[in-house]
Every structure is written in structure tokens, then in C-alpha cells.
Image: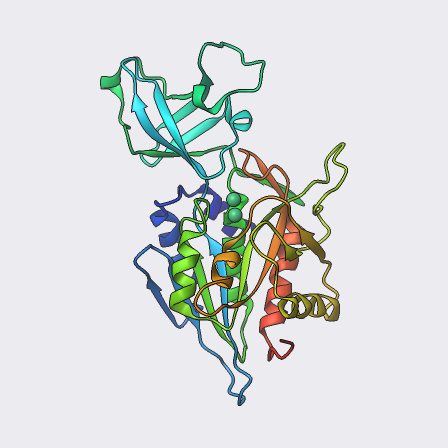
Length: 335
Ligand code: CO
Ligand code: ZN
């Protein structure tokens, strides 16, 4: 699965410009789904029809993983070729200084801060600019409206993996692998690779309305706090996929949470419960669409979320796939 993860993390895909990610995913799942379509916002909706009959047992399950990653958009170019930017998604000023950005055309830049050669104090987002090494405006191949994402190398360090965009390419990888491994199911599986999650769960809102599922499960990262001096950690690397109880915008449906916990217990899959004090997932938007949808989330714990080098545990990733395959492989009755 590591090769699939690397491929997904290497692709450029800021919010609103997810085409390259979508093309890659479409090719990866073509053989394992029954139909695919792309909606007006750009969500990729793939359907895997039930492989077994069974009266009254069929549940329409929507699984959501977002294709977009956070980044910046050029808002102004000065005479010397320095770029001012607007943030797209939850960008943290203190995390990006001195790190690299990548544009769609391959141009690289470095984030700097006004008036300081070496930044000692907490940087102000309004003082940050992007430097692509140009000496004049005329030299630039990028301009106002172009978007850049954070780029550091994907690293496979055995049990632990590093990448700038596990949020949420790791969720995309888990969803693709689940579609591949789920050979038999009495349920209708609607896998949605969503757009624009990082700017407010926008793709999930329209996809959820269109798909009209019985239950939705989002696959995303959660902030792991198993690092020095963090007193209360919402999750830890290596302890298994985190089954959501609550975050800022959603309280998971208790029946969905119980179903996932029981599945993990039955198959002896390590797992943890997640209560997150920042952010939310696509499930929150689908939960309140139409007349309401039973919603849950399975999260991959990640250190340094929304920072240029994120870290996940490979066992957690594989256990997340096992949990999903076993949960979806049989009739769902616990609601
Ligand atoms: Co995010
Ligand atoms: Zn995310």
C-alpha cells in the first residue's frame, strides 16, 4: 500500500483544483467499482453494487475522503517579483516560514517574512510572502489566482511515514484500498472522493445531497498529541484507527460508533475513540443534508496536521482498511 500512498502524496491538488488527484484515483479504482461519475463541483462518485442479494439487508453506505490539500493563492505581485498570498484552508503562519511551496506548473517558492532576514518572533500571516527566486515581475510564470501547496518529500521510514499532505491523501489511500479488498458485500458502497473540504466541507455537502445515503463515514486524519509535554492527547500514533465520538461540528451517531467499535472488537483490530477540539470532517456536512444522515468518521492519527511534514503510523493505516472491510462486508443491523 505504500506505493499507492506515495503516488497520492506526490500529486498536486489544492482546494478547487483537484483534477490531477481525481485522474489518479479514477485510474486506480477503475477495475474495482461498477460505475463512476463526476458532479458539478468536481467530486468523484464511485459505486460498488451489492455482490449478494438478501432481502432488506442492503444499506447505502457513503464513504468520503477529500482530495484537496491546504495551500495559498497569489493575490498580488510586486515589481520585484515577490508574491503576496491569500490562504486556502487552515494555514498556520508559524509552520510555513522557510518551507517550500509548489505551483501547478512545477514552480517552487520559499515562504519569507517582511522586514526580517531571520524570523525570531511569531510571524504575522499578513507579512508573509512567497519568493520564487525571480528578480522582476516580468520573469514570473505564475501570477494572481495561481495556487501553491506545501511541498516536502514523501518519506517511508518503515513503520512511520512522512508527507506534507496526509490530510487527506491518506484517507484517499484507505478508501481505494478498501474498495480493492472488499470482495463481497450485501451493501451498496458509494465511495466519494470530495473536493474543497479544507474551505468548509463544500464538496461533501453537494455529494451527500446527491447520493442520499443511509449512513456516511468520513475517512480523514485527526491530530495526534503523543509528543512531549502535551497533557491531554486526543489520539496517539500506533494505537489504531480512531473512531469519532465528537469534534467541533459533529457528534457521531451512537449507532454508527457502536457498529464500528463492535466490528473492531470482533476482529481484534486495535482502535481508539476520538474527541477532537479543532476541526471537523466531511461527515459533518452530510449528517445535516436532506432530512439527516446517520454519520460517523474513522480517523488516522497524524502528528503535525496542517504543517508541511505530517507523520502517520503505517499499522494504523492498514488497521483502518481492515476495520472498514470487515464493517462493510456483512449486513449492517445495529442502527
Ligand atoms: Co485538513
Ligand atoms: Zn482533512
